[in-house]
Length: 333
Image 1 (cartoon, rainbow, N blue to C red):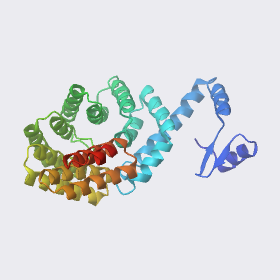
Image 2 (image 1 turned 120 degrees about the vertical axis):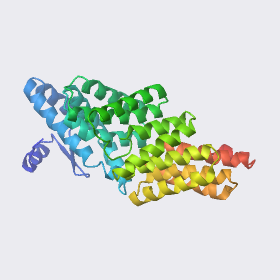
Image 3 (image 1 turned 60 degrees about the horizontal axis):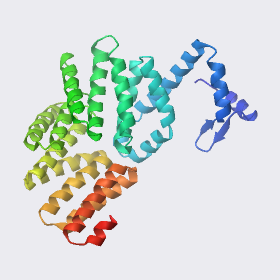
Image 4 (image 1 turned 90 degrees about the vertical axis):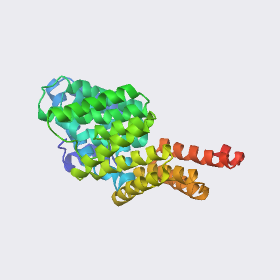
């Protein structure tokens, strides 16, 4: 907000601010409420201050877009979690004021946090609000591109919440928007609606359709050197082939996906691929290998505090123990 160190120090001396170990300053809630009441007496001051706040946290999220799916994943998730109350406020203001640029900056990292940490219904609400806001702005190449990305990201959230018809609708809308402006999806996890449709087909049990969609999406992703979406495409094909009982093909696709995820140090993607590798090993009677994969999956998700991912791994471990008639062990999981 443009405050200088001398000003912050003066406020600390007057006990209006408190310095914390994390290089942050905090204000008592009663003082914050009083300051907000004073601020709201001038509409222009409100707008300027909220704009500065929204711009800061949009930049904060944008700066962490690459790292949130890389080697610094754990740290970035903690950083975003610690700022979540500010991020919610900044996003809400950007949506209400139709600051398309701020929404664009914030959307990708916010989606990744939602996907890793599991506040799916809140994420659904936040992205639906942004999509509704973007529908009211002038249609042009830039605005339509942002709307296309928002629709694609929202489609993945709908899969998480089990709203498959909504998911298919926004994925198709995203594809239509990209086609209308003759643009490809930007690189990144969840940005390609065709990949989303491929995974949705797998969830719905259309494994042949999922493979066809994922193959087409992989060709496009390879053409634009989009290794993030290639990982998803290989993962989808591995899952579909595994469900069809075509284990050599599933193993090949899973190995490709895992190599790409390992190169990027994407723990979350590595963990989900380990589930498929475990399923393949279990189907082929390699039970110790399957258990190893499931345990590694649980360990990676635990480091990221991904509750949904940990649950998936524990269910697989319980099923494996049950198949070996070790029911007491299964119950422990």
